[in-house]
Length: 341
Ligand SMILES: [Zn+2]
Image (cartoon, rainbow, N blue to C red; front, side):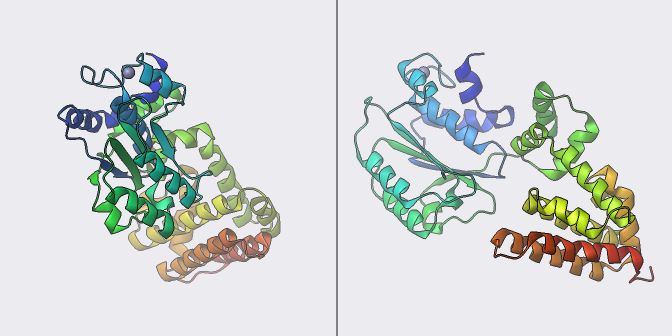
């Protein structure tokens, strides 16, 4: 398989939607503005780039994906195709700059350098603020001639209705488990139990599952659960644990603590321990859920959400203190009961 094929072929679970969009292009029915909508981490950006490479390829009339050897494909591989633009935030999680959208409108109104179609991939739509969205809207309203815009939108993200109404929206179907397992299995050594945890952590998001495997996320989580268990058994103090977590990815850790309080509350409501994602936590969480009412647990969950907000706002509150306050309440769950269940 050529380099282009690994970079510009759709991921296995995106192949059918890719094929139907390619068929649309062959019949000259490819929209001027396409919006790919779905779960973050499902591979929409990869699909958008595969479509862009195909639309730019010289041999597209006789091929079902970018050919990999024409002048256009070579320029795409070298990331120097003059008729292709990618608009994304400079850093993950940041906004797309208005200036980037202004440059985009110049690109759209200008003529093609290589005499063919021009393609823009913009991701994600929700990273545009109001000014950037309005600037994009102007571009969408003006006849864009031979330019195709492919917008990537994460499910749940904000999209201005006026932008949405000017795009053809395509929602790729969720990846089938067997396909994702086969794809991850080619890259990592993983068993069914690990795959089940990944699916629960990142539903319908195979690329996030891959990131979790690459960053050894599950071992990190297990290590954190071991500390939590040590705290609840009073082998460690609230301050000791708080200092460790506040000093290393505090927001991520608070997200997990919050997720776990949600799981414990769900078990208290349903008495179904399947809500606990990580096997190492099951006994501990089921025990806590049996000692307290769903109301008490849900209040603590709400408190963790507020703590998360404080950590994200970084409004000079001491992160160690934020963890100490919350962990003190976790510890109190062990020494009291609030439910006669
Ligand atoms: Zn080509």
